[in-house]
Amino acid sequence: MGVQVAVITTQEEYNLIDRIIGGEEALYATLVDKYKSFAFTIALKVVENRGEAEEIAQDGFIKAFHYLKKFNREAKFSTWLYRIVFNTAISYKRKSKQQFQSIENSIVEYAERADSEMEREDKKVFVEQAMKKLSEADRIAVQLYYIKEYSLEETAEMLNQNINTLKVRVHRARQRLADELRRILKEEALTL
Amino acid sequence: MIMENVTDDQLLNFLDGTSNDAERNNINHLISTNVGLNKRLEELQAVHFILQKQNIIEQPSKTFTEKVMSNLHARSSFAFLSPRNGLLLLVGLLVASGIAITLVSSGQFDQWHTFLNIGQIPVKNNLVKLLPASIPFDLKLAVKIFVMVNVVIAFVLLDRTILRPIFQKRAERFI
Image (cartoon, rainbow over all chains, first blue to last red; front, side):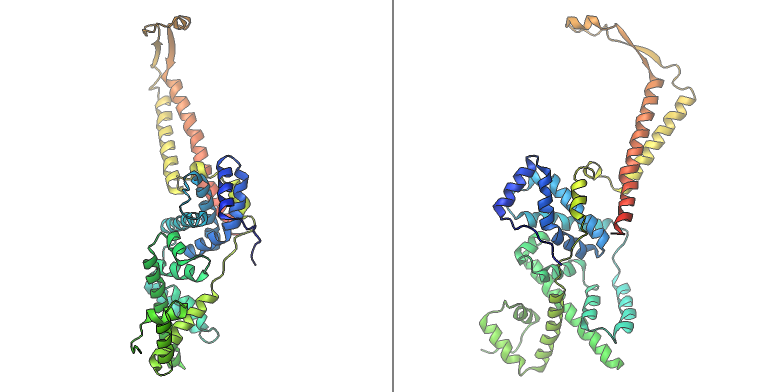
């Protein structure tokens, strides 16, 4: 269920930012309300934990507030903000003790879960599991690409990547997911 | 012109709707005759549709904005200190304070009484004449003040970098 947020133009947003920098800090809540959902979604895609994602998104907004004077308005405020949130999430994940699962571990987990879920779940479950075997960069790229909230150029800017690199990541991720799906379905057919 | 070899990239562009007319016609023609290509398109299409269904924008907690606004200044002052660095600094402060207390209690600074002579400073300003010629200085007292300041800083560090993050994380688990 979406939250209703007042629509403001880019110019109105710049005026709002000027007023916030000028000392009307309470107005920052308008920007937080407008962008919190996507910021939270980005953080969630990276850390895959709602509590941590919420904390990261909040930290991202607080950092953005303190660097607001340095926002040069060459990009959209949203793109600039999301890049801060994304970088915060990445650095949080690197520092976090919850390290990534190795590929070997994820294969074991997949095999264990596949046996129990194969009968009642559809391809969606397999794709979600196969997603865990993608590299972090490919997984985040393909997930944000499919949200379709922002253009490929804006998504590339958010992730601090070249647009061609992002395209390659999205294509490669889907190819690997399709390959994995084929392999899983083949195994499933053999077990029947 | 019919191209027999169609790559995954071309199939993905076809699914994304970014391929040109010639490519689209070519693929439409080939999938009706090429079983292997048709199967590959189905696999990619399955992934494409599943990912499309997952394009949900998640919603944070209802108190998200309030939390950001209330922490705009609270968090920033110690944002540069991770819990680990905070703990290291805390240990450093406590060790320094411990050493200072040990030295004071063993009487190391008992003899360190002196007077700072300010009357000999060559300053032309007449107002200086109003000041006393010397100020007593007690190193033992200075070390005690140093220890007290360290203890206060240690309490602040303990709160900001260790206790508060722990309780915040614990509270957010119940959101």
